[in-house]
Length: 312
Image (cartoon, rainbow, N blue to C red; front, side, top):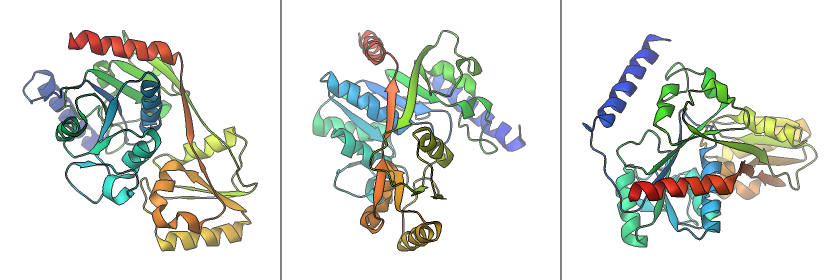
């Protein structure tokens, strides 16, 4: 481990200990808080899982909102996400959640303030805390942490991608294993473990697609495409949360012509970030990530029971 990573790890452990001892303050909202988070920087499937959890809750008639920092937006403060708005105002992932789930999504650097805003406007209800595992200033009633196979062999920032060591999983109520993450690679003694699988929903895909995306782990998208029987003719990768420009569109059109591709394929998040350039790339297929939770009904029952027990 590098000196910088060791220093970072010391700071993380000190911060967690201060919260654990009650020295750093933790504030609580009226409604129960369910945190969906991870250990690493990006690419673990938090947003698809939040969508899945939201659909499971909606199917049971449970009212909830989503609280998010609104990463990469160009505004500040607390704001309700207008589904007809743009990523620069709210962030791409909050906008995607608002459009797909049709529930209140509120962004704010301080998630407690975002929760207060939501409770004043929509009334106390369950809050889904997006990317909340490290946001310890807000009390939560159920902590869900997603891990990937890469997490098991990765190191702490800045040398690696981990924001916390694997030992921090002991703080979680549930550890969610993606379909490629081996359980024996993580410290899961006396931990509740959920299993998910991820794939794509191929539909109207060009026969020779140019695949492009600006996500944390683009190679995972390529692997999912190939698993679905889709072989890219060419590809272009951009930085996570990339906001597309006219120059990007010209470059993609040029690459399409040079590679002999007959259309474009991208992700839902990139569809958001294309903004007004969405219709410049045609034909364009946007492939949603399909996520399934093993024994979903029992998992949600367990979560709701724990929340009720703690509130009592």
